[in-house]
Length: 325
Image 1 (tube, rainbow, N blue to C red):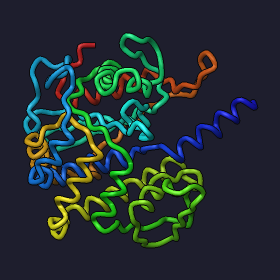
Image 2: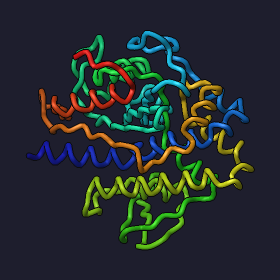
Image 3: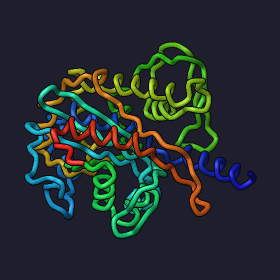
C-alpha cells in the first residue's frame, strides 16, 4: 500500500516536469501541415530537421516505398524527455500514430501509453518507452510496427519547448476556458498559472499548462482531450492567418530546432498540399484499452488483445493493407 502510494506520487511529479502530451504531438503534426510551404521556403530550417533512418526510405513491412501525396501513409510522433541530453537518449513520454488516406483526406490517430507492455526486438518484454533508450528512433519504430502490425512510413520527434515557442511566435492563442482552475508552470518551480472561465488569451507557457491539466477536471482525461482539441484548432487558425506569412521564417526555425523527422523538405511540401485543409473534426481517435498491472513488482499497462486487434484492423484498412491474419 505504501509502495503503491509512493509510486503514484513519484509518477505524478515526473508527469508535471517532463510530460510531452498527446496534444503537443498533434499540434506539431497539424502545424507541420500548415507550415509545409513555409518550411520549404526556409529550406535550411527544414533540412536541419531531417534525419534518415538506418533502414532507408522504406519500411520493412512495405514492398515499395510510399509516395507521400499519392499513397496512404503512417507517421509516428514521438515526444521525448528533454533534459541534459536534449532527449537524445531519453524515453518517449508520448507515442502517437497517425494514418492519412489521400482518397478521402481522412486521418486516424491512436496513442500508445508510455508504460505499455510490449516485445522490444532483441531485448524481450519491456515498457514501450524504453525502446528509444536502447535503440533510438529505429528501435522505437520497429517496436511500434511489430506491436500494431503496420508499416511506419515516417516519424517526427518533438519536444514541448518548440510548442511553446510557436505559440509565442504567432502571438498566442485564444481559448474558451470551461471552468476556473490552475496548473503549475513548467518553467519555474511552484509557479501557478491561473485560468478563469471564459475567453482567455494564452502565451506559450500558459498554453502548455492549459492542455496539460487533468486533476482538477471533473471529466478527467475526456475533459483534457476537449481542451487539447480546442488549443490545436486555435493554433491552426493562427498559423493559417495570412499575417503569419511575415513570421514564416522565424516559425520555421523554431520547428527546425525542435523537430527531427525523415520527411524530406520536398515530401513535406507535397504532404502540406494534400492535407492542408484536413478537418480535425472528421479525424477518428482510436483508444487502446487495457489495464494497469504489476509484473515482477514493476508497473505496466497491459493492452487488451481484442482492443489491439480492432485497432490493427482499422489502421490496416485505412492504409489499404490486406489483413492476412
